[in-house]
Length: 432
Image (cartoon, rainbow, N blue to C red; front, side, top):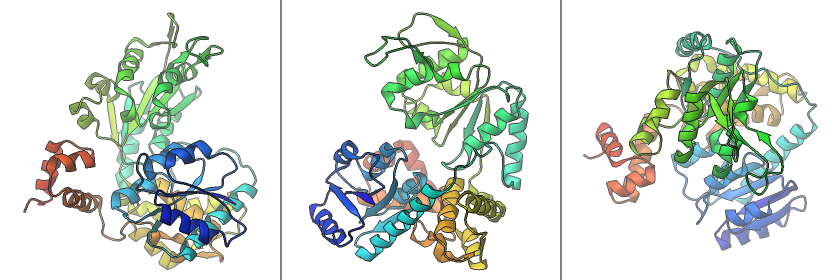
């Protein structure tokens, strides 16, 4: 197993190298920063172990750059709730707090090794049907009702909700229940495309438009013609390209990069975001006219913690699917595991639940999955009564303390305006 260790602290890095040298089954390559690691990483690597707090590119940004190509273990000596939640959203399964025993790290590596071994030997399956809901709650039923009504029209839909709640599933559901169901459904994640490639990805290009443009290429809007295009993480779209998207929506035509000729398109647009677009508009980061064009029908998807009655049914269905996919014997959750699944707050929502159940199914030795197989207590996020508001309050308190109560510096750290931060301070009674 080939492992990349990314750690800026030379003492920690050398200590890990020495400790890991005792394990001949692991080939270790260490890097002092994320930039060097990105240059060297290739398909031969199986696992990345990275610190979070590093100069230049931090661990979270580094993981985003990896684009899901590698399994990741995070290690940090300064774990905040925000970091833990961000890492969960990015699919990280192990979050190790420094200082840790080398045995703790080895156990985490062994878990990832077993996961990869099972996944590599699993037979290929047909694509899972998208746009189907495993379970519904009262909170979700009302949104589904609106989605079904919206599907029968060509109105633009804006899906709102936290990361991992299933916005793409909703987009598929709307498409599959629309008159366009037999036509293409094209999904694009704005956050996953490098800024300099977004325009050509969306609208295409002609030969010679730029250095590597060796032939004409249709963009995603043309590929979706007659069907639906899903623009995920629309809040991450660069401001200077938003005008071109607005023009495409208004004029129902696009122009390939480097071309003077316009191409007519017939596309239904569904977009999604977990960002506060109104705040981005106030900060000059998102066009108000584009917002109103996209926001004809807004649908707020509730987080999983507000749909507790769904959790066990969803978990059971995922468990059955995983056992079938990897040819594992049938498994069930024991009563203690069920209690823990219900007690956990699921900051990563459905995406996190899928990850946790898949991992538990593969790593559990018996037919019954136990709390120890779920590894929820090691995920760096409080269990039980820790609501999003409580987490936000704790995060704001931490940032204010670290900045000595400086509102301007704290607002910058939190990525919000001073006005919004002052409102939250008042709301949580933090000024007292």
